[in-house]
Amino acid sequence: MYSDTRSVSIAAADNGDDISTDRIHEIWGQTRSFVLGSTFTSKVVSVVLVSGYLIYFLFPSSALTLALIPDRTLPGVWNLVTAGYFEMSLVSVCFDTAALMLLGRTVEPIWGPGEFIKFITVVNAITGFTTFMFMYTLYVITRDNFYLYAKFGGFHGVIAGLLVAVKQLTPEDELIPVGPLKLRAKNFLGMYVLGATLLCVLSGGQHHHIGFYFFTLVGCYIGWLYLRFFQVTPAGVGDPSVEFAFQKLFPEAMHPIMQRVGRRAFSIFCQPAVPTHASAVVPITPAHVSVVPTTPKGGAGKTSSDEVRRKEMADRGERLLQERLGGVSATIEKLSQATGTTMKRVTSFSDGTSGV
Image (cartoon, rainbow, N blue to C red; front, side):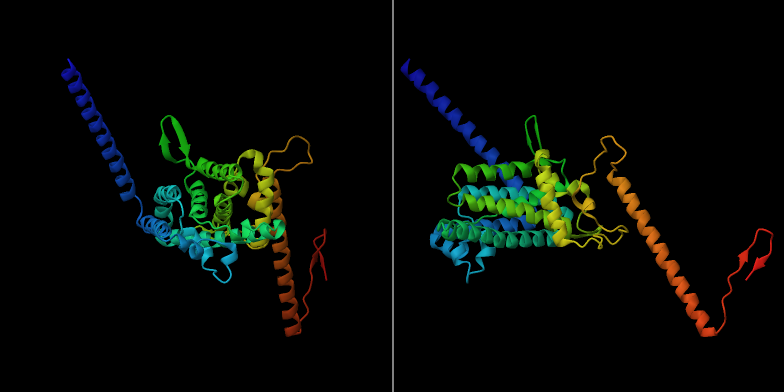
């Protein structure tokens, strides 16, 4: 009896080992397929991120040179750039490389490797600089040495910028199917920013979590600025569509606040008379950039944005007509003076006669 029970136990253990082994092989196969299916550029950048973590793991003192430490940024300005590629947590490097490969599969085929690398470089560098300014400002205000000597790094800012890009390019795509849930590309940015905020608040703003928070917020904003005003595409420069206004990146309750941020960016980076696209014929106005069209709520005094735009086009056409007529009159006057002749004005009368 004892031997039979022992045999059953051994068989069950062997069966469990087989199941666990099969599960490991399944996970390994899925991971390998995921990595091989990512773009070449994403793989190269992922190797850089993993190398940064290995350097920190083997030589922890390297953080003094490669991580973002406000007190060491001058004269070591290179840490504004290297901090983005310098991972100091195993969880962070695994998450960032997986997110990079996932988002790169959507973004790089549309943009091309050159634009993809350019976007990563610009967002990472400006995110590092802006985060340094935030930390130094907090030190000046609070006189807390934590903000001066804290060290942090990671690819969080670029991931946030790529989430903005995915929200712009393919907002309705399902990036990660989770059972019956449909997690679309447009939802990931809000979840990522919310997660960074909660992590920073729950940790009391200490350690590298505040750096993660700043990297995420700044990366999101810089990514939007680049795509909105500076990215060169076959359609023109930037994306002036109402659907890509800054407040559209956030829940509706936050739209009034974020709309002011978008208007501020417009006033800094654009001139009202300069169109963002070569084919545009109407001067860009703040309404064109960040104001969501609304329907009038009764009353004859309220006008929709479409009516305002039509009125602007009519006024501009009238001004152009007057300018051209003025140019014709000036040309006729010059010809009259040059030839010494007198231009006669003929007036028709109701009786068919004419007078001079």
